Length: 289
Image (cartoon, rainbow, N blue to C red; front, side, top):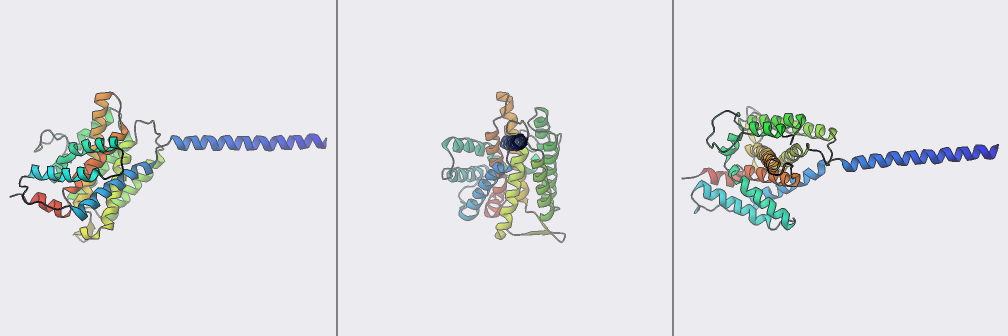
C-alpha cells in the first residue's frame, strides 16, 4: 500500500512538472510571436544618430542659393552619412530611396501643409494631408482603430506645438501613455497593424530624448511654460507621413505591406522634417534671398 501511494505521489509530481513546462512553453511561444517595442526603438536611436551628425558636423554653404538646391544639399549630406552607418547594403539602398522620397519635408512649410484638414487647399496640390493619408491607411487595414486614434493625437499635438501651446511634460506624458497602450495591445509579428504607430511613437520619444540631451538647441518659452521646439513636431509628422504613405504605396502595388520598408520610411520622414527646422540648418534654409 505504501509503495502504491509512493508511486501515485511521484506520478502526480511528474504530471505537475509536465503541465508547468507546457504552460511556460506556450507563454514563451506567445512572447516570441509578439512585436517588440524595442525593435522600433532601434529606428529611433538611428534617427538620433542622424540628428547628432547634423548638429555637430553640418556646414552651411552660402553658394547654394535656391531652396530646392539647399534641400538637395541637405539630402546629399544625409546620404553621405548613411554610407557610414552599420547597415546592410540592401538596408542602405532602401533608406537612401526613402530619404530621396521624403526630402521635400525639409521645407517646414510642407510639414505644416501635411497638418491641414483633408479638403483644405494646399500650396502643393500633390502633397496629400496626413488626415487623408490616415483615412486611407485605415481603409486598407494598414492601421487599426487604436493606431488611427493615436496617430491623430500625434497630429493634434504637432499642430499645438507649431502654435507654441504644448509643454514638454504634456507631450512626453502623451507619448509614454501611447507606448504603454501599444504594448498592452500585444500586436503579433504577423499582424497587419501595430507597425506604423510603433515606429511613429518610438521615433517621437527618441526625438524628445535627443532634445533633452542637447540643451544647446535651446528651450522655447511661451505663456510661462517650456514648450516643445517645432522640430520635435516636425519629427513626429515626418515619421507618421513616411510610415503611413509608404505602407499604403506598398499595399497598392503588392497587395501586401513590406513593414521593414515602412520603418525606413518613418525614419526618413522624421529625419527630413526635423533637419529642416533645427539650428543652423533651419536658419540657412529660411534665409533665401
